[in-house]
Image 1 (cartoon, rainbow, N blue to C red):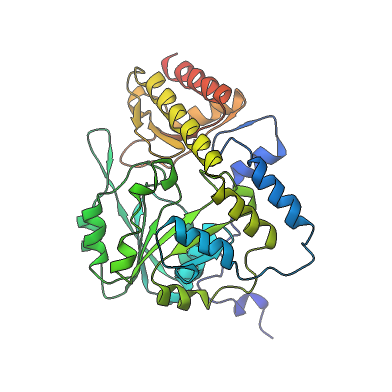
Image 2 (image 1 turned 135 degrees about the horizontal axis):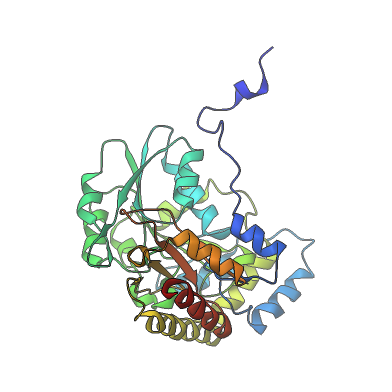
Length: 366
């Protein structure tokens, strides 16, 4: 008789369950300040809390297909209607669903690195070959490299995924380069998880009207501050959205997150407050640390800031460990571009941001 291990499909065998160690630590030790996971430090607005309470009372009923919230998302983005919108349990499920519809084992997914880990996670589970095209690090800045992305395309390429603004570098790629990639006709996912911080004027949503192969993904986890409710969505041509929606789990988004999402989308004042707060705090941290010798700060249009302290002679992982001793959770980053000085900070409360500035300065200049 065969062992159960012999029945696993080869591309899943040996893959560990994804566990976010820093989030687990933050829940176990709530006294630590969470500045590591690109969360919004502001709790949900009163209107969102009212919706949670109202729809919590009908949680004994199955949800509908989300026509109301999908219509609202379409309206905000200048699209025809709900048929242009697919909703998911966070944008992570949206990615999973899109990948399933295009990728077979052995086929290729191009990602522009450093980037959001979910592309790799969902690609691996489907047996995809992940093709990582690095951004260009020069003049103390991470530049998008669309030429190298285009050169990486082969007859096995099935998806190209680019975050805009990029996570973790916080910058946008030029629209003309999105057009060049869209013109290939390959399924092209533009991940706009953080676009609200710079405004929807920076979105590539217009491309979906001209190119059926372009999909925009977004989330309410960041600027809207609903990471714990898990609500994300994809925008695109109605025929494409209709086809990839066929692969969704029935009732994949619960009643409570669906109506809470609608309340958040309608509460434009709450969003404006969160965006203004975030952007002023990004400026504060960047300006406060600009004079630290050897510290490279990547100008961010999101709710996190990437740093490279390699030139200070200190290591990023040691910076993160020192911050944790002081009660602050920062995000470690892998060594790259010949430097071991990388780390990232998520925007916290005003108090947390001032603590973070003091701790970074203390560690890097002592």
